[in-house]
Length: 145
Image (cartoon, rainbow, N blue to C red; front, side):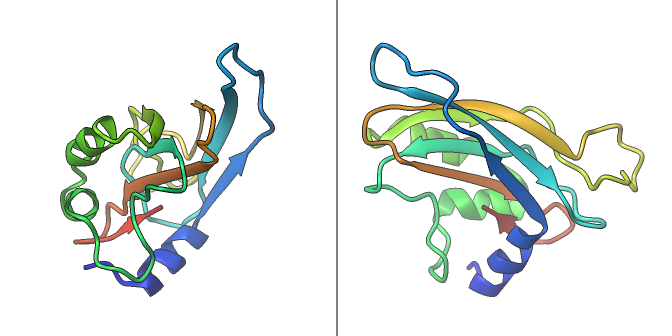
């Protein structure tokens, strides 16, 4: 089960920047560029999963037990169950699954991965929310979102 304090502390170590919409699509969607930067001193995170959705859905609730899909991310770095759940949810509008982890800027393990990445995601209609989730790699059951 997730602890709200763990989530709050972990989130402080990441910077999420959401820029103004780039362009409106003919179907009413707006495209955003979202930059996630790992600001921690030594905590890499798994490739983030980003999702735009309506207020009728949440991928996690602070202070509540984690869903099975978030548990899989937190314990195993396995995003497949969350991706499957999002694909079946009509309140979800777009999902972006990153391909690489985000490491601290000093790259303590000399991984060659970056500490910051910009993703493009679109929100349609009533999709006014953006959520993301990643495993905190140096933990046995932590995630950030």
